[in-house]
Length: 290
Ligand code: NAD
Image (cartoon, rainbow, N blue to C red; front, side, top):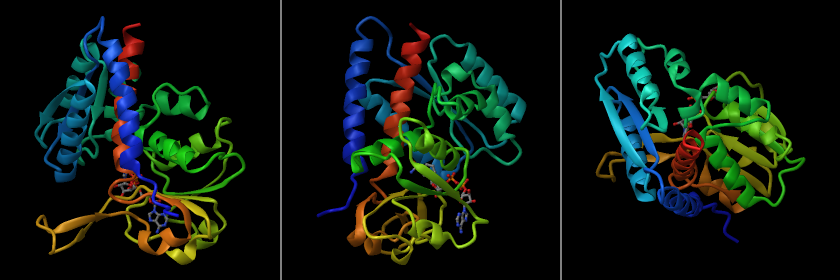
């Protein structure tokens, strides 16, 4: 049996459902509109934004990229957010991270109208998620939940180890996994965790969101494990035209033979993230214009 959990295929089915829902929404309304704020010229960020714009267009969501130079002041950026908040034609606002060092990322995220916060990073939306009353759920963790539900009939009582404690992946994913509709038993590991392997070896589900190639090796997981690889790492590869290739945090080739299910990189979590973002944007339009 093939353990490969194909994020591209699952994401395509999520996008198809969104495309249909957008189609019926636009029978008597303007298309959902997403405003993307891109600061500086971080090469990966620019490519993520291109990917989001293209995917949005394919499901009928309009997107506008507000590109600003690296030198933009925090004040100017907050003004831009204020303008987008006040613009009735904008349904969703997304600020592509990371921001330059001189800008306080938290201040920018907090300035976004929570009703337009399609990334789900505003403290109000993260707080709502934590108490089980989600409004917008961050795209990467909700995409991971969709993949886990495809791979496993029931998450109830499963031992899930989340490696990484970021506000955008690890923490919200831990909240989703322990929610009453999922009921997993959750352990969160991070850079100060002692004996990571002891935790991952005991797990039915391992999610790696760290940013370190081959952090999770075959000896660290049990037979029948389900592995979700969130990491996106560039490693030098002279055989590629662009000089690098993308790998995750997991030693895929070594683990796949003993796994129940495992996501590849690329083609796993990445496409799901974009699909869930589009779903959130449609939801924002539906709720704002209800
Ligand atoms: P981050 O980069 O903010 O932080 C890394 C986390 O890893 C920290 O919580 C840290 O405690 C933990 N960590 C570091 N070294 C560790 C070690 N040796 N053992 C255990 N834990 C350790 O996290 P992030 O923003 O969630 O990103 C993590 C990875 O996921 C990155 O590679 C990023 O590119 C990728 N990512 C992918 C998607 C996607 O759509 N596929 C989305 C978001 C992030």
